[in-house]
Length: 178
Image: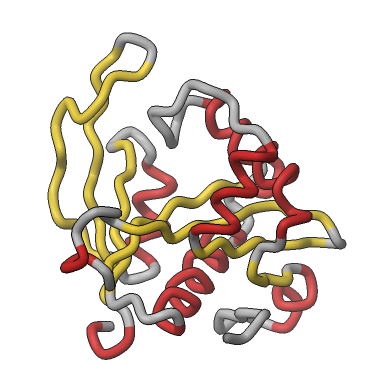
């Protein structure tokens, strides 16, 4: 498997952002960026902060790509098993994406999701699925630009801080399905 994934972007973007598979030493920074998402309450139902040990498990057990700008990780994306106990979902992965606050809306998320799709296909996945809060307009717009299909809305899918949230279910077919 290739260690560096590059989407079709212009030369200035390519030189400023490098995307690669995550390594054990990235765990602390991956957890920091995840925790920004927890604090912001716009992309996850999770309310507990992650530790570097949590992020180390993600890196060891799942497919995780990171985006680096000037040697600093500014975002990451992860493809985890859709269902651990059902072999018939083996080719399906659930995608998650977290971008550092200062790097949001700069193209980092698009690049990471493109790279994650490529890496997941290389690893044998045929589909990525995701869930996005219906109130998260920027993320919904981004996946639409990247060719993800809207499957439907799970209403009152979970509660965050005592408020029910709806999630948009999206999917992207990989390889022959693209």
